[in-house]
Image 1 (cartoon, rainbow, N blue to C red):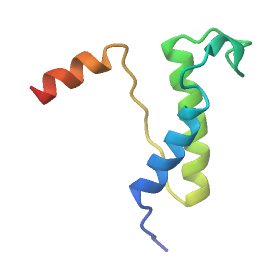
Image 2 (image 1 turned 45 degrees about the vertical axis):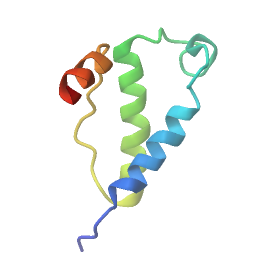
Image 3 (image 1 turned 60 degrees about the vertical axis):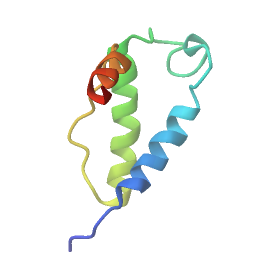
Image 4 (image 1 turned 120 degrees about the horizontal axis):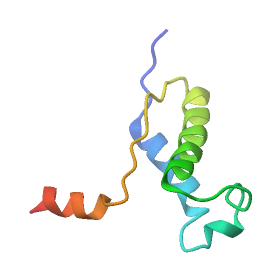
Length: 79
């Protein structure tokens, strides 16, 4: 049985998850108090969390892309 999962559900979950880290020293927050908060480790944590949520709502997460120059890329797109 296929059901549509509204993207905004996943987006709200992502925002809630990321709000836990916004404006805080990552080295003091689990799991980054035990592992180095490199871009790769941050991406893995995002993937694990969002994949778990997607499974709960009946959809699959295929990949997560993260970039250290996201705002530079965004500015190029907006121009």
